[in-house]
Image 1 (tube, rainbow, N blue to C red):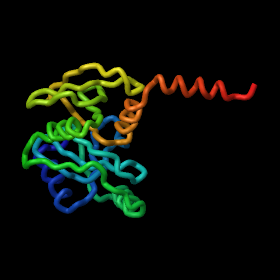
Image 2 (image 1 turned 180 degrees about the horizontal axis):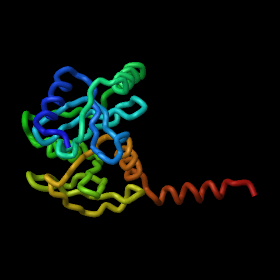
Image 3 (image 1 turned 90 degrees about the horizontal axis):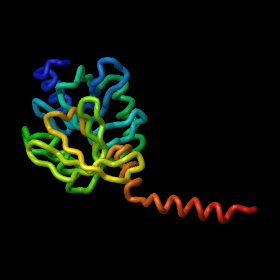
Image 4 (image 1 turned 135 degrees about the vertical axis):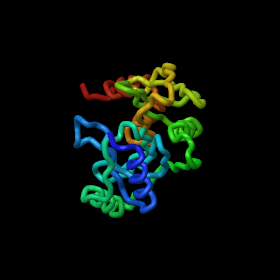
Length: 199
């Protein structure tokens, strides 16, 4: 793990300069990292506006500094992604604001709750996607969704146990779309298709 004090200094510099940063969070897979622009930072957490590998804005990502192995800013990969963002005239997406030194995970979860958006929370080996039913200073209550974005089930997570949070990324938007649709409509649509097929 990177030294948290030096890591905070690095991320603060990237934030002040408006430079893209890559966060490496998996020691066993050095090719797996999160790229984006730092929006919020304290000594425990960072929130970045994530950028996908193909150069599109991909929501907000909160990351515990304790799981970050390294942070690299403005390398060739970052310059390439920045250029793609400009060429596509990409719009940043969901706005994020926070108070100095506030709990950034709490801020992300409040934003998801207040806007009725889906989040994904990683805690250890667990990955839970769902709507925020409630959040306080210690815990978050999620209505966890199944593979088809349906059947919400209550799950409670302790905030300090959360490693990462994703909001407004392509995966979360997919779950929102699935949740807004009715599985019964899929059955009806397939029946209609079957009825209109030539014999």
